Amino acid sequence: MANGAQWLRNFRETELRDGPEGDGFIEKMPQFSIFRELEPQQGPRIKVRYFASSIAEAADGWVDAQDLGPVDPPGVENPREPDWTSPPGGGGRWLSNHRVADLRAGNGDSAPVVARIPQFSILAKLAPQIGPAIPVYYYGNSRLQPVVAWAVAADLGPIDQPLQVPPHEPESPADVPLVIESPSPNHGGIRPQTVGCVIHSTRGGAPSVVQEFKGTLEHFRNPGSQVSSHIVIAADGTIANVVDPELVAFHAGFHNSAFLGIELVQPRIGDEITDAQYRSCARWLTEMSGRFGFALVEGNLPEHRQTAQGAQVGKTDVSLPYSFNRLRMFLDELS
Image (cartoon, rainbow, N blue to C red; front, top):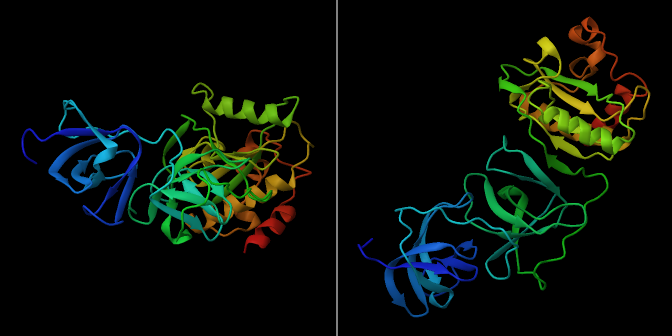
């Protein structure tokens, strides 16, 4: 880069391309991204350096000159690029998933799931694939919020730009749980082994299952409580991710170092455990079984009351009407 090269900014979203002509796409950039000119304009485009954002690596490419204007130097050699704060418009590359797919907050299996999107959802590709995943924009449906996230490339295929942007996304089936993030500070380091998962119920006594769900998450977010689980499952099947599955959650005393923990929302003993909860529980346990290598058998999935620690301190959860046989039915549907 020559000293004194011009700094530029785009006053509308634009695309970084691989040449001064043609349709070779590198990545899509939000309004007010910053560039450093590398070569004088050739035809309609200028060669520039684009700097890294939270989802895209730095890259050199060509941008339409009509999208750019000069700005003062940013004061640092490698300025941080802005992230997407509004839905991308048309242009660029488009993708769709050929099966139900998880969108994650980061690139990798350990990153929290932020949404489970239905088959044939429409995604704007934002940047090149890094490892197994591609950064995308999902436009949302009546149950899922729009989000910038990472999708596994193997789940995706290219499509033409939709006729309408933002596109009309397919609705989420009732049996696909919503996933939200509610991180807790109450956890330890990496769990040394994983032999199964302890099933708990909340028993907070709230007047409604909605208030019970909210209150449980608030309790787990309070550092003074020193309790948590890996997930909490609401009565409608919504999964709240609370502690990274790789880490120790504080849910079952001396079993924490070997067991994951699930909390089923159940305000009082004897309250219903819904089919939506069983279904979400089965989906998550199936994913964790594949990840950590434990078998999905009753001995590896005890209720809290059935553990040595639970018996020692007088725990009664989950108890009837919870039934492992009922859970087994939903696990079998996924096998």
